[in-house]
Image (cartoon, rainbow, N blue to C red):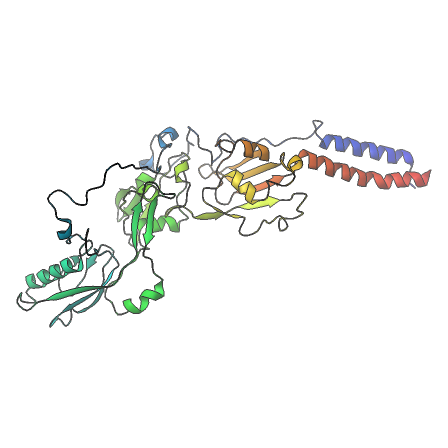
Length: 422
């Protein structure tokens, strides 16, 4: 049987350990350095090395504060329908009024008398051209079917394939293709949108016998989207496209702001380079054609009222967040916010992220009450990036309660043992 003095000594050491845990100075609190945390807009860019000095430049984040920001428009007078001296009802050549113009990807039918070898269904290619046998391609984008028929007649006559007296070409649209249109101004998500999209099975039967093809997947923006999209530090107005030793720079900011943009068609062997500014640009943190629609984060919320992540509703849908989510929104999604105000308001949220420019792991800590009261401050409420980790820690009140419960569990057997000895 253990002596009572050893039991007393053990209880003394246990109490000392409890006091140490309660904050007597023997514990080391983690040092969270969040001054350069990736996800907080600030005025100083991150310095990092580049293997190619061609893309090196001196940039400051102050210059990028309004980069790719949405523009607002106001109009006090009606917009004129046409230029002076132009009858809008006679300008069908461009298709601005009246008949709809043709666009790349449209499926058309070409018919002419004695036109074996030319009659058939055709798809306008990515440049908007109609490719007929023998003759050179005819640019058809922006034309009406009547204007295109006239151009086809003229091309066949110039090629001396038909005589003018015997040629009568008819062009008819069989299927309108999906088109992409830039939208800006007073909309919630300005940018380039796709309209008139159809399911592949809706077009298969019609296009199986058609000549030509059109693809929206061989564009510069599609290559960037396939690479999980641009980061917030991307230099979007200077995207590099290298082809056969030649280099061009493309400005893709219109995809974010709703302005027109030249989206280059890619070929095999092309190389796409997206330079970095070193600056975190908040205007790039939103869903678009070249940024992620959503992303996955790793969450841990072992709160007292929910003894596991499953019970705390930390599942598939709560850990997949839309791009542009901030720490407060992620904390609410992780069920870190709410419940008993007295015990849950002092809870702490820890965000673990990897800085893509330096490769360093960064950690920031915020209290739930601080997030709720100062969510408008970027320094307090940073953006959450893909593959970040979020952990919720209980408040000091909950910790004291659990420590006291643990202490009672430890002391109770010793108390019973002391009574038996006595």
